[in-house]
Amino acid sequence: MTSFSPAELGRRIGSGLLSFPVTHFRDDLSFDEDAYRENIVRLGEYDVGGLFAAGGTGEFFSLTPAEVERVVTAAVRSAPEGTPILAPAGYGTATAVEFAAAAERAGADGILLFPPYLTEASPEGLARHVEEVCRATSLGVVVYSRANAVYSADVVARLADRCPNLVGYKDGVGDIDTITRVHARLGDRLTYIGGLPTAETYALPYLQLGVTTYSSAIFNFLPGFALDFYAAVRALRQDDVTRMLSEFVLPYTEIRNRRAGYAVSIVKAGMTATGHGAGPVRPPLTDLTEQEYEELSALVARVSA
Image 1 (cartoon, rainbow, N blue to C red):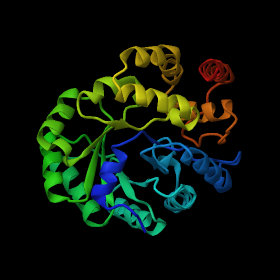
Image 2: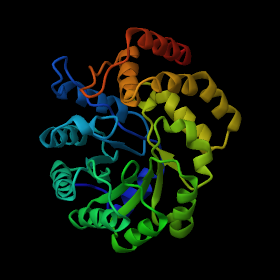
Image 3: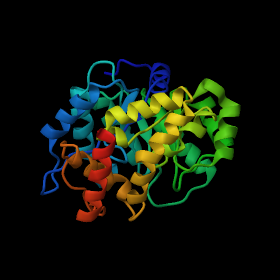
């Protein structure tokens, strides 16, 4: 059972850096639970606001529902006390409700609600989707605005009024106008999370919009660097942020941008480069080429030094 009420969860995840641990696979692409649990223990040694188990970087889209529950359970049992674990929910509304029930069974502290699968929907339909999930669980829910589920300020305000356990708004679009409108209307009613790929790139300007935290994929393999970067952002140390962007983050994104899906693949490559191998990505994703891996390894070595 979670030790956080929805309101407590919202405050907790807004107070520190967030991350999506990768999901460890063996060479035959089966889930390597022992390696995954060891990695959660390792990441839990750092001061983070929360971890999203089986999230986007954790390849939620390639896991079966049974695997998702197994991954979330492993994260809950391996994370240190006081580190919130958020579980995924997604696909159609009925399936998302089942994922929410599985998250409660696993002992998760909250839910990240991904967009519905495939189909586009009206604002009214998206609102009902979120309401159904929130109504089906006692856990705090973070809605993920991206792809085919982009929530307007009007919809978010309506949901915040109707769903007491809606605690967070995660932006994966980068629409400054919408973020400004949502924050202006709701203030501290919600926690605002940066969710664009390699969120460090946007962290400083987003802070000015009320987005106090973001999910760092880099934290998986360079946790010290990721936390230093977050600290520089929160302290408004522009020179330090610019230096770290130039030295690592922007060259890293140049490799990431070479192929669709590399936002996940490059993280697993980074895990290998730092001695914490997590296995390959599952199809439909593809791993970095050998040359790209060498480029990444050189970047990692420089920033580690």
